[in-house]
Image 1 (cartoon, rainbow, N blue to C red):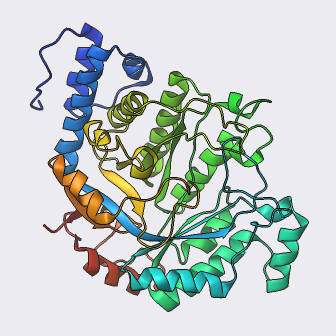
Image 2: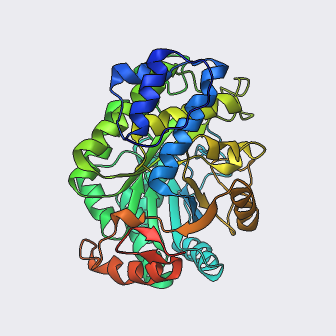
Length: 405
């Protein structure tokens, strides 16, 4: 039985029983997990304490981050979500595909600043909607955007040694296979399993790629191929607390079957001008804390849980109390192109706020250490040498999957 030290305050019997079970390593069932929804302020303190203890038991006193360079390969997309300012139509002056020379210049700048990861972020198959995107790709000799991502990932890996991580949206089996050759991991945000959000007036109305079944299928296909995946939920876009829980449980089910979910992000919605949701209220810090703690209870101590520090910079330290163990990617070179209004914290600043809470900040790679084998035999030849070099640079211990302190 795990050592339990919950505050001596009055909480419901069912809630207390659940917290004791999860502190002993139990993953709650769907029925059990509903107990954590909409807890009172008094019970929230117990929920946070339990989430923090679960994290400490499994992860110790370390929080991680990835030092990355952010490459927005194209900001065209087949979808237009109600909260997004990243995506541009071909008629807008700012729309683009980056050329190979532009990609290499950004990656080289990242390499010179000690980055280990190159994050390719882009719209989902813009050539399926926009003639201009299709013509641009054809001019360079590519039939699809994922094919162009494959080529750029290979170029960056060969020229700089940075480890590619790609967020390309919905990918087919063959596209996943192709990207696996040069990407140590990939990502696709589930956001939410609610199909209500696709209805007229919802944030995902008219957005084919945001169909939850399609996103879950990408995670499953990646699992069959042994690809480490980052996923997560976006809160505050019109979902209910129950739908947040269902989304976390859907992610857990895939991980229980395939073991390929390396990280789950809990990201808070930010209202932005010139979007359909510009006047929508943003989630509060308490809402984020409750959701993060629920994620830790539902996903367990071994899962890596991240919350971006730049999207709530004044209160991000409180996320540590709710059980996170990772800050995500932070770039000393490029902005957060998805949220350009929210600058990254300097790594020195991130270290200070982490240390102030009694934890140590450690750099990680785009692939978590528990997904690395000692001989790296699971990696394609093109990746093996670069991964070995980066392991040494960040100080991973291959035997324990932890950082060497």
